[in-house]
Image 1 (cartoon, one colour):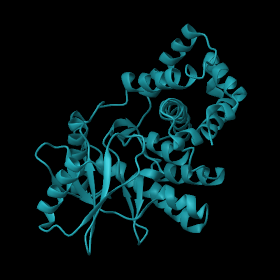
Image 2 (cartoon, helix red, strand yellow):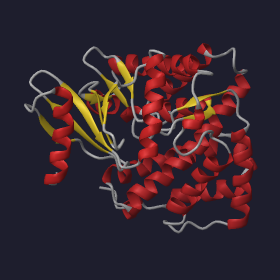
Image 3 (cartoon, one colour):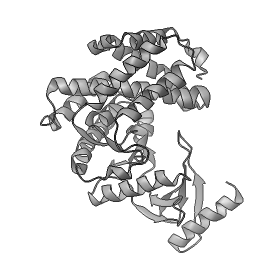
Length: 338
């Protein structure tokens, strides 16, 4: 931490807690440019966040206030600096759900936690209906043509092109347009937190769950966050769990879906999420050489190949299917994974 930065942070914190007996240490970074710190006093902990992207912060502040008014499990924000770049948040626990899964694998406690995530997600979606002003969203108000196309190009540009996988550009881009239309038309829509996965869920000492990192939330398909969580590459939940919790979510929301519509929603959200995630792995892993993302590539490839092989609807997208099949020939040792 640079000296000027350290002074800035210490002055900000001491102004809130009214003394200077505390320590600050930085948390490991992820895919974001935000810096997160733990503030430790003699009897309390806080999360301190610095982010120079003010519009992103404003979205997070608005959403947090809105969610807290609805009594939803998100962190309270105690103080924001006048520049709107630095803020002090509630400390919600030592570990993310992802870290607990890494330690305990798939025992009964993890099963209960995952079940509770699905219950909380459904509750979160239903409680926020009609209560969020998406004009205050950060980059996109709705998961429609532009963000869907962005995610498809993210895969093309930062994964397929970086690895020089052969495909017919014209045919692929036409198929992308069809995929965009299909996903735009998925119903029902709810608040979509966008990056809803185990590393963005905090677990406290009583196994209560809290959601974080939702500043990119927008209006979108209800099944997007469900799929992001249950089919994330790193958690690699057992297939039996995925089926069990898909069914649980469906039972909780069957007034909004027929079963065939639900399956279509799930599979289209799998398709776009798997492709978007591989784009992220390409950018953060292949280009920026961040180890966490590099290590996740093989499982990400396995997910998209399995979907392509098993889902009948993929026959509508022969060029994309052909591109995906070529991922099988990639040598993982050439991806710099360790």
